[in-house]
Length: 227
Image (cartoon, rainbow, N blue to C red; front, side, top):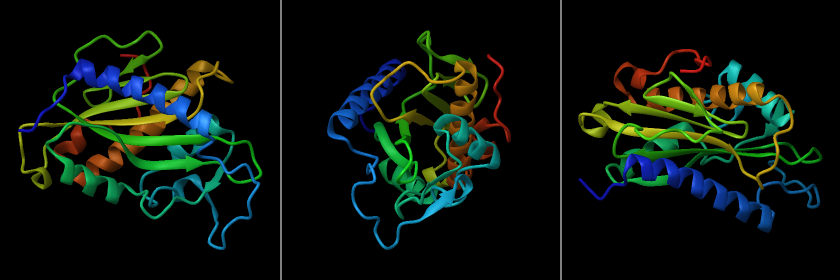
């Protein structure tokens, strides 16, 4: 097995990279187009359920996106942003430990307030064992799920013939607001539930695409009661 990172290091690394990436995006202005340039000919705006290949965002997750972004319509996803492509990338990467690989990026439409949401996948060497940071609420989904007012992560274990049926492959799906950290706007608990719902939707879609036994232990609906 290739070099791997510890679960505690992985968790802290996820949050550190998220912070660094957020600062970079804020500094460089990546993400929203600001409506300054003309839209390309193939520019489209779609409903939440049509994002990221069309099988990643459940109806509940689409409603959660509205809570998070304030919008029910979004820029159509680029062709490479699909669960199918992310799954292929994960299979190719396994067993190497990885951090912050794109599943999808979600943007509000031109002419509306910018909001960038990034969904990522990562591989870890084991289940989460360290204590969660105080900003997170722990939830009973997969091995563990944690939700904050601007991000959520779902950890699940996958056994699949697509991965050679090893004992367990530990997958982490993250959803986070890709921007300079600020005080949350809106009800904090409602935002936590919304981020957890979106993270669950993408996690379940990835588990199904990977062919994980028992869908990686993920429930069919998000579990939002604290663990």
